[in-house]
Figure 1 (tube, rainbow, N blue to C red):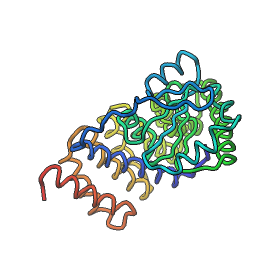
Figure 2: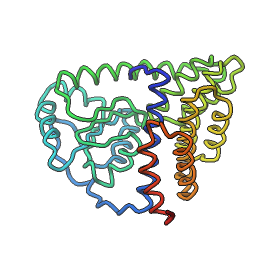
Figure 3: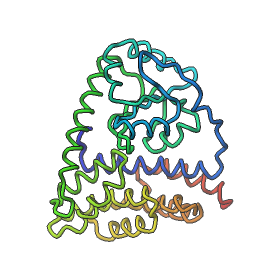
Figure 4: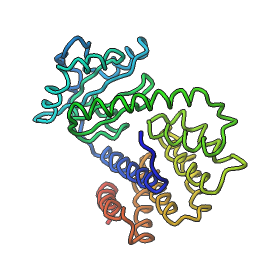
Length: 304
């Protein structure tokens, strides 16, 4: 996982949260998708593939392996190209020795939770996850075989190194900088439970700088929302809005605050906050997305 600057990270966070808002809004009137995710799949090589993500997770826990998730789609030419390039290779069979492989249709019910959690939008896509769901590797779109193997082994090595670091940490004694950086990476690896105590430590650290507290609060609010604690997320983001001296960070925080009511199934409240954001930030790069959400929310709640 490559390092990113504060500005890039904040924009990434705002972008992910905007996607979350769109997904939450879509849930207000979404139609049920046929469950095609558990149909039989062809097993390349000697790998024991499944089409059930829960079965794969259970096997991974029992066998202490990683989970290899492949998303495929109808009429996906690049999906077939990747299978042709990867699956016959000895390197691919060797890669899967320590993994439980699962293949799901991108549009299936079985894939929906994985898509939402890990931000998968198109096929082909591949995820490698720990048994607990921590992100190890993510690829979306076509990669040729050399690039795939180069990147997957790089990310596997980085994950092993990061895991050793996390396991060695004494969280109550972490320096502020390490608490922030580790907490952020855990969040980006979709492990909010492990991120929470580290970011909380950074926020309350007596020697944390203002910038470190700002960054920790920004990510902590997202972690709290992921953990199903919207009231705590609102309190954290309001504190950030009140204390930060960064106009850019305050704008992102106000955008995040507008999305919290969607997690509480309060579209009217979200509509009011998105309208306020649009009035307060007429030059925001997120304005087109905000305006689109406002239109959808107006339709959902029946307010002009």
